Length: 425
Image (cartoon, rainbow, N blue to C red; front, side):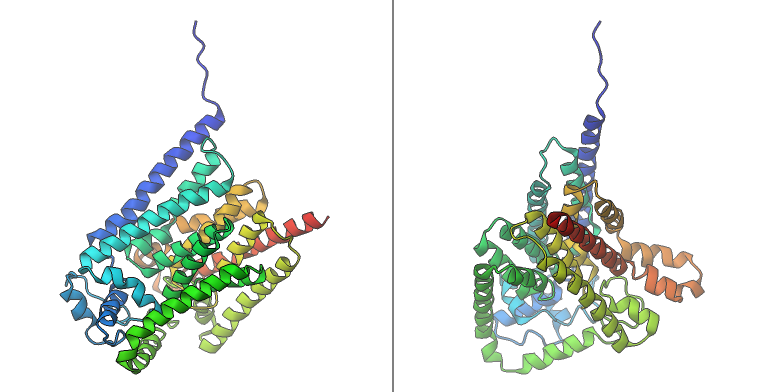
């Protein structure tokens, strides 16, 4: 008689991991590019119009007319843009990078941008999975892929065609190339990241500065300078009016009705000013507490870095993930930027048996859900109005993501500190 062997637990685990990866990738495609193509992605509208204006040596930051110009380029008039989305706020160095898209009408430009982000993120995740240090026959590598493709922030960023999508992807790819000692490639991608969204890249600059990666930093500075000079060539004929309009748009961004407003529940933002303002109703105090919290975490990070051994790639990724997440806390950041939590997942899946890794994994599962949609669109309508106005709801639940990031950073730093002590003993 033929003996039938039942599948081993490791084989079943591998099959489950592959199935979850397929499902997560399908979710990534549907919630990201597919929905973006169905007229939902419009966050790129303002920089797209601003790039078109700059190409024709016109003031890119002038507020009136953005909506009309966007629709004239083929946008659906039924979608519209809110007041914040109609005010270009991206730095001048970002606009030439949108020139290739500005050559096309809106629907084509959005499709190209979304497809580029989709392809680059897929490449990024596959390349990062190799850093888990396991083969394709290991379930751990497939679970990493499933988690990475399941991250809701990147789905949302691509679905809305938000420039944060490409910024986070370029940032993570630059760190990968830096790890591979590809200084030129890392410097170029980091420079592009800094030119589009200067709030994402500085933590990496600090890490490379303290790590004495002079060649990488020099090349990055050169690329940024070249892009800046190219931009100035287009801005020079316009005069200085664009500076005033950019300042007005930025001021509106942080005003009562702006997208970065502290003054009401804003789950789309992940900086610590949001929960602190909800508790104390003081903008100066919220700023002080947010910067103090981030500074204390950064100081702890610096103390660990000083005690670190050189050329320790395992520790480098741990410290890079910590400082990158710390950088999200003290300044205006949208929920899309939490996609860089992918760095912390490397630690989780490389050291799955440690307490800190399991705790980070448990906290990170929240980012598999569209928190903003769940809290604002679904949950809020089913709870008492009095509780919706309470500090527990506004500063706790609606500001859940910044608290989670703080907790994850503490766990990462604690793991790095323990690692340092073990190496010293």
